[in-house]
Length: 183
Length: 232
Image 1 (cartoon, helix red, strand yellow):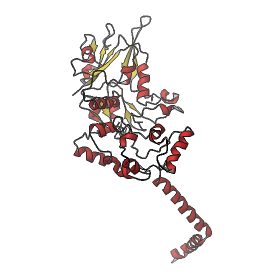
Image 2 (tube, rainbow over the protein chains, first blue to last red):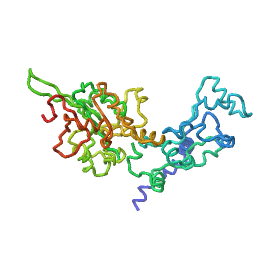
Image 3 (cartoon, each protein chain N blue to C red):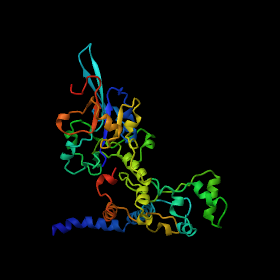
């Protein structure tokens, strides 16, 4: 058919393009770029300043609130400042290189630049005090097994969604109107 | 249940606009560019409305601070097609920005013209984003916003009181405008509490409410300045 004969030169051009080194190079660049971008998404929080071990600290008898001091009485639980870490680690407790890093950073006069992993949308009002102090919720209800992790988490242990919040609010007979949480 | 209301003493108000500035700072209300302002697209949750009385040379300027009146019978919530605005049990008329579709029915239904529309995404001069209040969300382009009686302050005050196992005290929760008023012309509190200052002030013989004949039952009470009762 004339239809077929019209298409064939184009098809031949496409075939040679797919076999060309430009296509191959493009493919390689695409995959490497894609992997790079994907890894940035998955580990979006980047490396933490200290390879922190939650589990070790829990074994040593610390509570979450010892370092995340706002968890009971503030809206934000907060991440520990240098002074909190130095409270115990001013003199070496272990042979750990990571522990040594704290003192090196402190000696240079640097604060710990923790990267916040658990984040909420900016139109949601969330208060730790209301959930932890007033409603007596355990940290693990929303933060899952982060307390048992041996490396700094790169993403929240629990996926936050409005339906997750609402499920619990319905179960606990907390308010479910929009303005209770949305600012 | 509390019923939050405000009293503004016009005899004390000097029209200095400190409330306007405090409100903008507290609630992340962006500054309008000169072009935007020229088109009447300035955002403000509270504004000073001037009334000119008499004719030259016997002219008198009246100044009226105008926040959302937080009506008990709000005309704005009846027209919202998506339930993005409603009234809480304690009488605060809220706007849920995430729900608002920007149809502006409420803006037109409000007889007090206190609702404003975001014609563009909020912008701050370089470096000023640092001063934003983290307790108040930034409104995106295309939604209506208005005064919330600084409801985030209520949430905080309630929590503090609950964690100390006591009821909320009078004056513990006040909006930014009331807190900042240099002549202390504004009072805020629970209208249901017989011992509150605002309840006492709202029973003054000088009291009037704006456009009362419309039946919206606003919870912002004005105390007349001299013989002026806002009717002219």
